[in-house]
Length: 93
Image (cartoon, rainbow, N blue to C red; front, top):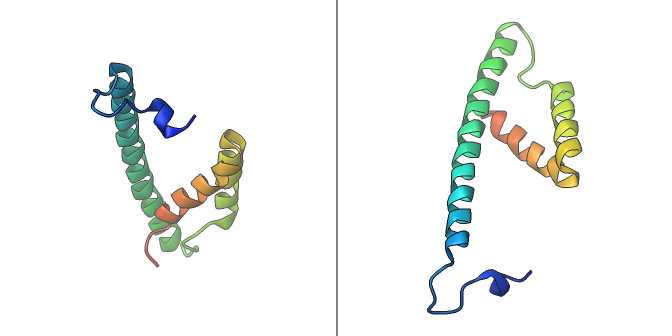
C-alpha cells in the first residue's frame, strides 16, 4: 500500500482510526525506549561487575545467543535490531 493510499486527501482531517493508531504507536515507542534505557543501565552494571572480577567488558558468546534469539523471533531483520541494541548497551570504549 502506498502512503497516498493511507493518507487523508488534502484539506481533509486525518481519520480518527489513524489518529488513535498513531497514539498507540507513540505509546509503544515510549515504552520501547524506556525498556532500551533500562537495558543499557543493566548492561553497564553487568559490565562493571565482570571487569571488577577480572573479566572482559564484552561476552561475545552471550551476544551471539542474543542475536540468535532476535533472529528467531523477528527473522533476518532481527539481526539488525539485535546488533543495534547490543551496540547501545556496550557502553563507551
